[in-house]
Length: 326
Ligand SMILES: Cc1ncc(COP(=O)(O)O)c(C=O)c1O
Image (cartoon, rainbow, N blue to C red; front, side):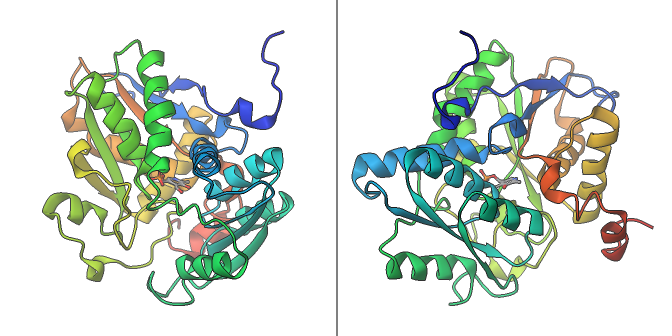
C-alpha cells in the first residue's frame, strides 16, 4: 500500500518544493517555495508541535491524558490540537486579539479551549497571552510547551525541515529565506543547512515593528523599537531562546502593506494560496535579489494556508479599511 497512514500525525512533513515562475521571472536563479500548508494542520507548525509533545513525553513533563496549555498565533495550536487528539491529550490555548477569527474557530473546532488576550499590552503584562497561558498552566496542572524558549522547537526543524530541504534539492540549495517569529524555522533549519554547506546564505524576514533585525545587527534587544503590525505569526517584541545569531547571515525588514499585496500576488500569479507571512517571505526574497547570482538556488518557506486569512488579506474591504488598497 502506498500513501496509507496509521494516524494523522504520520502525515506530517515531506512537503513539496514548488518553483516560483511569475513573481521571480527576472531573477538570475531559480526560487523554490517550500509549501508547508501541505501539512495536515495546513502549516509548518505541525512539525514542531509533534516534536514538543514527543520530547515532553520522554522527559515526563507531559503525562498520559494530560493538558497542554500554549500561547499561539494559531498554527502551533492547530499542530498541537491534532497531535493531542491522535495521542489522547487536552488542549487550552491563549491568543492575541489581533489573530484572525478563522484561526480561533478552527482551534475550537479541534476541541481546544481558547482564551483571547489583548494585543496592546507588553509581553510581561499579566493580561498578555504569554502570561495568561502561564497562569492557566499552573491552575490546571498543565504542561506549557513554550514554543518560544523550548529548544525542541528549533530541534524539530534541525531534524526535519533541514534534512528534507537538503535531500529535495540534492544539496543544491544555496540560500534559505524565511519569515521569522519564535526563530525555530529560521535557526533550526539554518543550523542543519550550514553544517552541510557553511556557504549557504540564511535570510530572516522581520516585519516593521519587530525588534529582531536590530538585535541581529547590534546584539541589543531594544523593546522601544516595537509597535503593533498586521502580519501574523512573525516578528517579536522580545528575544526567544530559539534564536542563534551565528546561523543567521542577513535579516530584511518588510512592511505590512507590501507583504499583504505580495500575498495576494502569490495566489493570483502562482496559484499559491497562503497566509500573510508567506507574502512577507517572498517580498524578503525580492528585497534580497542583489545577494543572488546565476549560481544560486533559493528556497523560501511558505508557512501556512490562505484559508485562515479569507476575512483579512483576501477581503477587499478589510484591505481598504487598513489602507493597504485603494
Ligand atoms: C504563519 C506563520 N508564519 C511564520 C511563523 C514564524 O515561524 P517561527 O516561529 O518558526 O519563527 C509562524 C509562527 O507561528 C507562523 O504561524
